[in-house]
Amino acid sequence: MTEVHDFSITRRHGEFKGLNFYLDALRYAQSQWVNGKPAQALLQLNKAWMADLRPEDSIMRLGSDPYRALVWILARASSQECGYLGNPVRHFQHLASRIRGPRNEIRVWRAWVCFHLAECVLCPNEFPRDVRQIVREGIWIPNFQRARYEVSKGGWASECESNMMLDWMP
Image (cartoon, rainbow, N blue to C red; front, side, top):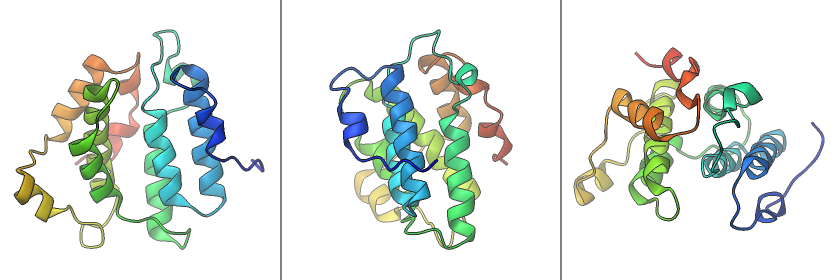
């Protein structure tokens, strides 16, 4: 992939966040990764999870599993010099506890799934939770099984069929 994308690739969809928005968010994420911006790639994956896909838009049928992309990015960016990664564990914790807007409930559960995947892939000493926020705001962190269950109930068709979610869990 040699195309470089910017924010306009997802903004052009306006309020309609269907299949084309989803695919463009993944393209944008890949573009950011290729250009040495893993933290930005993760932010664009977040956008992909905002999509409102129809049952016939199965991510498994499309061959575009954002959870697999997340784990792939985390594994590579944490083990080699690939650009600024930030702290994905903290990012997903903050995201899950602050999501607002359309379809926020399912997006919260997806963020918790991503939080747990990040914790499993990344070294906890280098990528810790935000304990101050947990204490200060009384954050409840659901376990992986609960988050995955909620995504399977309210998410896209076949979203939780991916073994990638389970491959990284203890």
